[in-house]
Length: 149
Image 1: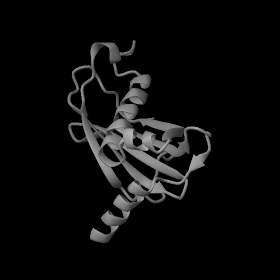
Image 2: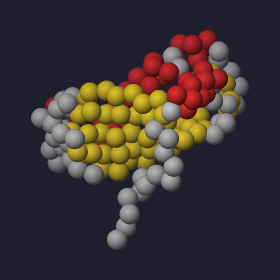
Image 3: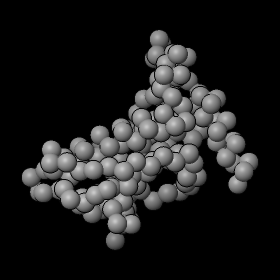
């Protein structure tokens, strides 16, 4: 039997952000459930909410830094339908090193996990396009969290 692709080797579950999402009629595909592409949009909404909470994009851009995605993977476990609401979506930092961060997300309805996602991203200097270290403001929040737990 194949195991799910998103089995965590190590997941620190750091700096979470949660949104309540509502499927709309234009999110539904021919099979009467939320289209795969909608999850990509929802992940973008989650990442923007995460940045608002922990590293505002406006501040990053003042420093000439921007985020970029390197990889996205989604496991669709159960279909989400039009009247399934609200969908509770949570995104968090699962792991990171000096240049990359792995973010994980879950989409839940009625306490059931409907889908899981993993995204790998990094930050870059907008002017040069070169990678930069994870911004200090993010590392400081992670360090602060670790000290309290």
